[in-house]
Amino acid sequence: MFAVRVSLWSAILLLHAMFSGIVMSRVEAEDFRDRYEYREFKNLPYRLLQPKNYNADRVYPLVIFFHGAGERGDDNQKQLVHGMADFASDDVMQKHPCIVVAPQCPSDIQWVDTPWTADSHTMPKQPTLPMQLSLELIGVLQNEFSIDEDRIYVTGLSMGGFGAWDAIQRQPKRFAAAVPICGGGDPTYATRIAHVPIWAFHGDKDTTVKVKRSRDMITAIEEAVASPKYTEYPGVGHNSWTATYANREMYQWLFAQNRSD
Image 1 (cartoon, helix red, strand yellow):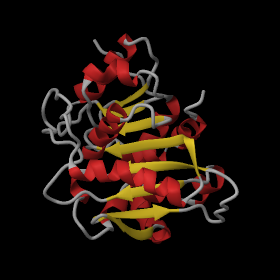
Image 2: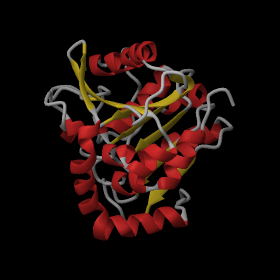
Image 3: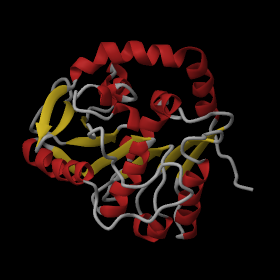
Image 4: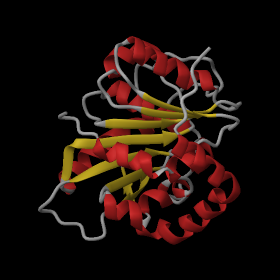
């Protein structure tokens, strides 16, 4: 049987989210989403968050966020619904000043061309167009802003969790860490990404994206002699992102990762 690994802090946050976190998340989204600048890159809408007192004389980590299927479109707003209010919150930005980029996937396509309900998938030879543009966008932002090339991170939920796995599989030397939430990757790439610090999250009652998708990736990476972190929420369905993005322990871990280590 697969071992369930849940930290005490994560369990506490999960209970909090069940009673008040979802409501607070919606309030925070209203409070903080206007901190993200509206932008576009080659017809790919994206929003950009900068530190309050951005200083080009210092370097900042960059986080790229891949949203879920329900936030697809071209309004350049829906992709901020989940998680992005937490990243833009005063406490996170004060402790971890960073640049956050949130591209929006069009309605008729996915970050990764694979069914979410499948037990497994083989990584497509070519990335989808929105994934390709998102990866190109990182380089464009590196030319525009003072970004620490050793602290580029990727996270995503559901469809975007697949996106986070896909990104590190395609460019394993680019990312300093990944936080994929209720997604899935291609286990045959485990050796290729074993050096990347990973903290994956999934609910064990998820009927949208099977929990085995995260379990299989973690097992494959462990068999590649690496030590990824994995939190599996007991009794939780598809929404494993509210508790995760509310978890300040996750941010502390993420921003401590450095590609040069």
